[in-house]
Length: 297
Image 1 (cartoon, rainbow, N blue to C red):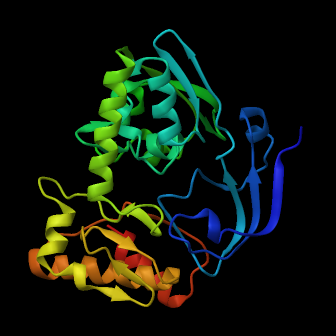
Image 2 (image 1 turned 135 degrees about the vertical axis):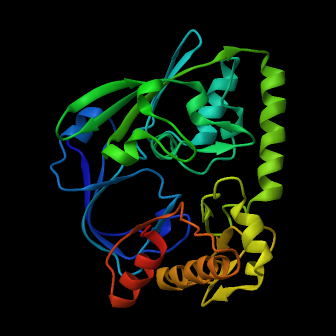
Image 3 (image 1 turned 30 degrees about the vertical axis):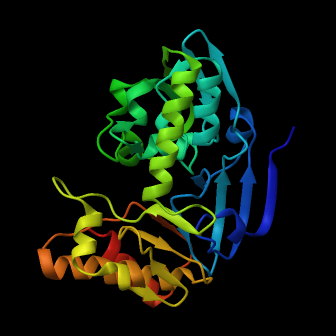
């Protein structure tokens, strides 16, 4: 069956920030064979939960892997497609009496993106339970790396350095009682709800990575970031490292707000904050200059 392709696709409602314009071409593969049938060049995304998409759209092809969401299990091993969302994976593991993925119950993103950035919460990270990852790159085709070969670090993996694309992940978990697992999931979800804005409030998760030995949220709080806003976007009043977009702010509003936050911390503490959020899309001269400030090290 041919891969689903949409031309001039309005991406706004698929992004958790609720920003974005028309994308020239969007492909929705449902499995690895369909993914491999797509001709480059293209950019690959999962759930667009960690991506700021330009309100001016993007003149190019993107691949959204959200439909590559198959999950299987054998014994204490679970294999998940890159498009599986964190809560679905967590709940599937719990239904099998398998522990290790409870912390992902509130994750808005999908497995591919979470492996790419080694997503973490409550002292755990996704790499803790990884056995192997099936990857793709044009030079090597489809191949598999072990957990150690993935070179996981805080908010990093080999995928960022080598431009590898995650297709599928095998997790090795441990057996535990379903009631205990569900209790831990409930506590993780309650913690997340009290410390992060609900996805009913458009946001993209944490904006900046924590600098070594410190907290981006603490630094931003110290410089009064919670009072900052630009256009329809503002810093969340309960945590200074989150931007929410309740009033339909543009991608430019959010970029300006991110630069304001970064510059205040730089001025007061001589510390550079670097974004967790990716940027996709066309850029005018102002957006280009803002991205240089934010993303160049």
